[in-house]
Length: 611
Ligand code: F6R
Picture (cartoon, rainbow, N blue to C red):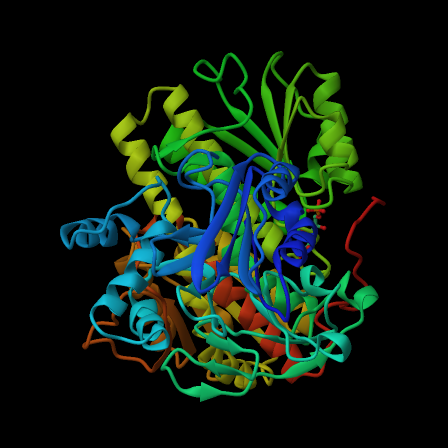
């Protein structure tokens, strides 16, 4: 995704901003820009292409301000042109933004109605105008930001500079990372903002991370954090040498927690790579196999969590593309030696791209004249190299052994693929595609919102930590997610857990239900919600302990006791991506209450290169 930097310095900051942007270039690289305050006035330099183009631009027309912000862009809304490059500015405010502002169209219309003029096709520009509008209404810069942030829907990190305010920089985060750096030694008094600490490492080793919903007011004389209710809060200061930053946990205790929280950002990044968000279409960076329209079926093979991603995707390929799907765990597939029709398409899903069983299936399929499409996270992996098409999930390195962000990125990419096949096969039309793309674009923001349920989930996990067994139930795409919930809990807390299709309950597992068995029900408000509710009644009638994860309200006549995790309201098609968040958090917090090492569970390895 994009990278952002802000500096309040003691001398000209343009050079330092470029230095920090270079360290962020891995996040996005189609255009870049910088704004500084020149004698109190906002001045910008922006350029399409790599950072060196911006550097050339600055060499020709230098900026000398001591306060500035910078950005490297990975286009989501609008082509990578100079006018779409950040910072976006309007004479009062300049902003750099990472993420997606979902409700930008409504806000832009409202602001146009008040006379604001827009220069770009981006979602981000609306933020600069929103802040400026609040200031025109008489608010101070800080109050304008505080009043406007609650109006932004989506996942974002922001850095904001104000005309005439040489000693003020504001940062905000909701679903995308942002860290404050504190200058020390020769740089004492300087303060910094960055998308990650590594970007700020040349200037300082002292950091404090914003939490979701926070904004931060920086001045050379001090830094003030405010929470989502605009209340002053303290955020933990830490010292991290550069070497530690290379594999940095940020302000999280475990990589798993960090990777759970990174999901709104990396899912947005993955979606941005496979969608044209402005056009509302899927835009794959590769051609589908020529016979996509005629394909009789799709075969999927994978292991563990990646296999579960395939199970979810089966619903999508069948629903959106009417494409029959055969799916199997790779370790069974390879020895079953299934007959394969010549010229068929086989899809492999793997975070590492090195899993021995999946790789063996890939080679078997290749030997049987299949086209190979792989969804992998490691671009240099064997599977990526040996596939006809390697579709990359842009989750970044996943360090925690239990897969979290790779899973949701796999889902995001598989959803894009299912829609692309749907269009190629004439099953969905352009209007349906646009509707589903809009639903997908809402996912990162919904995930960021779902993260806010963490305190509630932590409280529930305290009780779950005493359970001997846990049952997960779901229907539709929530059924594979129930399997994933059980797998996550087993692998990091060692509590025995099972996932079942809710309708299967009465065919056996209901015998397990007693007062001691927690039953976690994944029930987005979809077409089978009422049926899931009936299954809940069956559990309640037998004294089972119900934990319901839903965006629907439980009917008043429900007879049992239910502990609910209330999810943000959403169209149900892609709920599996959003509901993965509480499922992962339940496993994580339960394991932590039990004193387990969530990052390195016993007996497990990150990449399983043996059978
Ligand atoms: C579970 C988990 C494993 C992996 C599986 C496949 O949290 O991480 O089940 O999903 O070992 O690994 P990859 O995706 O690397 O092929």
